[in-house]
Amino acid sequence: MDLFKGEQQKNVDWAFIKKLRTTNIHSEQGVLLIYDILCQYFCHFHQRIGHLLPPNLQVDGGIGSFHVHGHKEECLFQYGTSFIPHSGVTVGEILEPLWANMNQISPAARTASLAHRAEMLDDHASNSNHKKALSLREYIHK
Image 1 (cartoon, rainbow, N blue to C red):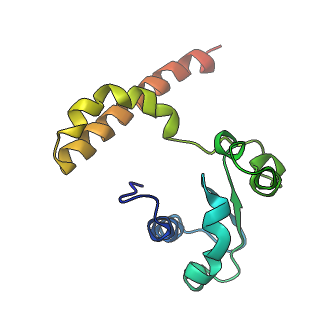
Image 2 (image 1 turned 120 degrees about the vertical axis):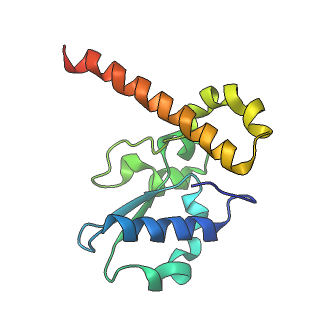
């Protein structure tokens, strides 16, 4: 999601609740929420949105491998995905590795209207995904 005016927890709360509702998560499945600053985000998580969560849903939290090593040592052992049962080693980053390529279009995006900027970024990300999908054939046919 796009975060405006900094990383406000209410924006992340809204995105998380919306995603839970649109993906039809069942309480017995549980959820692993991976977020760069989860150690801060989880402090008052249940007080903020606990009443909006499905009953008995277990929400585990983690910090992706890329960011957790920049945190305190206790964050690594509490929130590192390597230490969360059934999560495996998860980088937990989707868009950040694309930023280097996105920088190529940033001068044009900076001067674009809000709608045109969103369209430019979406087109650029779609092009990146298309190229990745085409290169998958190399691995599938081996």
